[in-house]
Image (cartoon, rainbow, N blue to C red):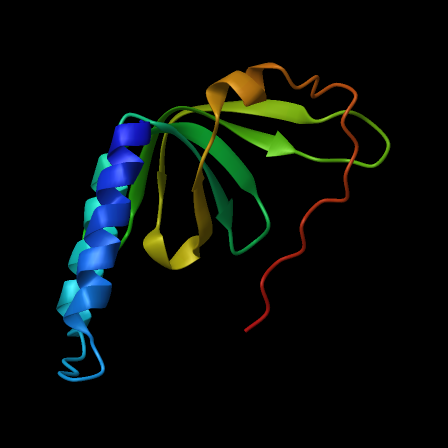
Length: 131
């Protein structure tokens, strides 16, 4: 996976080189979207965490996406945080999340995640995004 991120970093440097002081060429919206979709494609078959606009944290294996950033997760579960009990994991299985309901998508370090004792972890639930 480190090689994949090295490639992403090189691509980002190439994009930055395209916009220089001497020849400013702004990116089109489609170029930016294509780059973001490329990064998501590199994450396919990786375990990711998705935080939705209503404050839910859903973890699963990325299986697919589309141009509207709808995401398909397999082997997914929702992590419900509480200040009184440990983290509860509700099994969801194959799950589709609409793109307009996604706030954050992040890759999970599986080794670090496996070492967490979620039953002892306490946290306030996230609040919904207010527009």
